[in-house]
Length: 384
Image (cartoon, rainbow, N blue to C red):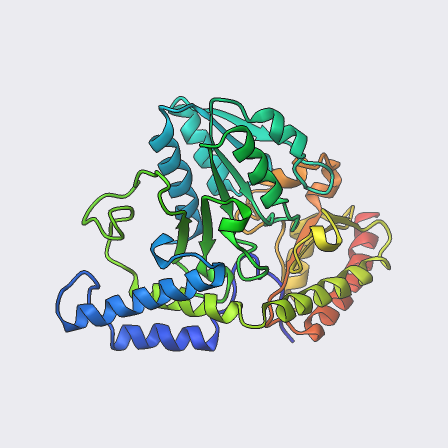
């Protein structure tokens, strides 16, 4: 039996996505910028994908800009917004537990002369709103905060945070990295006070190499890619039509019966967490209940290094990750767990389990049975 429990790293493309991607490759292969029939056919797929995505968030299709994925969307949002507003101030605010595509971009902007403020989090991975309120001043031009943390699944109070930012600094922009939340919960950028929002296709059963950035109408932002002036001049480059069609279909599919899907994901999570009570010393990280995402569980089994357990599970065709996929090969980069002020032993033994609606309850039971067996075996070995 195989148990794929690393869906926060990537997901399997759904059948509907596979079909539309194949169809566009075979039939709508024209360049959407071309004026002939084939170009117009391709352009129609791009427009329909934007409409499908916009519908899921109740925004305009003109506010959707397609990118190569979450990393580019985050880079575009931060660099484009910072450069467009630097005459108004130089303070950028983010959190200590952001994805590397945000943290590393902030470091780049620091080199360009911007002041970067990193907000701390509590032991559950939630940002303190008082710290945010104190950090926003008359030089603040941008705040970036992920909605769901990719390592521990904590959910930030985005609407509350945006309200604080816009109350203290009305002209500041509020950016949300929604890579781990989009398709798992309802997102309404306009109601939440969000100006910019990043999404990646391969986290929602869409293709890899495609994503989008929501840019609220009239938001001032500079492009970071230059060329033929596609997408209203904001993101040059020939459209990835198969990828765009794929993410549009994935977005639509993810939001069908969204509440029921989220409830199913939470039942998987609760099944796994209930099992953890039977393992001596095991620690579950992050928030619980409605303050945590329904599809992510982070835990540590002290005394067993994560890479040892990860490879032991692989022998049984069980796929999990050590921290996030972006840091699994670099344990020193597990900055989220460090921000929780965990003991080194817990950080070194951290594992992340993440689910999708394709995950079966039998996979959870199979994985936990093997994990229990391996815990006993490995603990006996390490105590010798």
